[in-house]
Amino acid sequence: DAGVIQSPRHEVTEMGQEVTLRCKPISGHNSLFWYRQTMMRGLELLIYFNNNVPIDDSGMPEDRFSAKMPNASFSTLKIQPSEPRDSAVYFCASSGQGTDTQYFGPGTRLTVL
Amino acid sequence: TQLLEQSPQFLSIQEGENLTVYCNSSSVFSSLQWYRQEPGEGPVLLVTVVTGGEVKKLKRLTFQFGDARKDSSLHITAAQPGDTGLYLCAGGRGNFNKFYFGSGTKLNVKP
Image 1 (cartoon, helix red, strand yellow):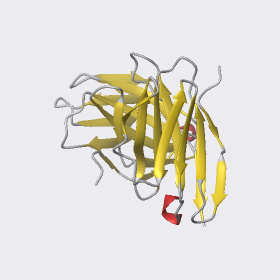
Image 2 (cartoon, chains in turn yellow, purple):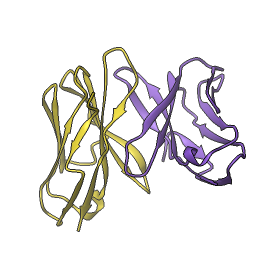
Image 3 (cartoon, chains in turn green, brown):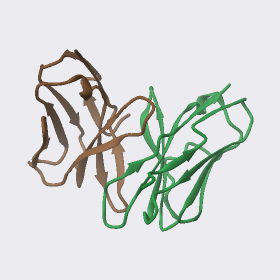
Image 4 (tube, chains in turn yellow, red):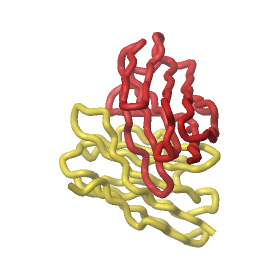
């Protein structure tokens, strides 16, 4: 079975550009999470969805960040405009109904120059 | 400020040694999870503990949830190079599986 799929795996962009990260959760899972990992701050929860509805976006750093989940099999995290301090590894994770096991994707390493 | 503090931050030991990693908080959690993360990959869940005082064993790994559900420990017996990685604890609160991750312990087991 395919796990959580993220694309791209690596992204290098220049400050001010728009960046879109993509995630395909495990089929049948109804919760989806976006995390950011840096050396300084560790793994931080940005936003999570349940049944495609955003439940808690209190971890989203600022208005430059937005996330959508148009259907059960796809989510995006967008940064516009990007800044060097956004450089990090961004993870998507999903979990199934009634379970607290989160399955993480391989991550997208974002570098903003 | 991290809700969950892990110690030590870094640990480098020889194969065959024992070690303990700690995860502490002033907050109460409904459950506590431990993950292991290897370079270039996402974290992988090792265990979930939900009852204060609960102890779970996974081969050479022993996990304990504190009586007050504010802290946890991970003990590895006879560490092997394959145990090398970043160990993360995560405390669960509320509904919808919202977890707060600790600062992490980077373990290196030398052959």
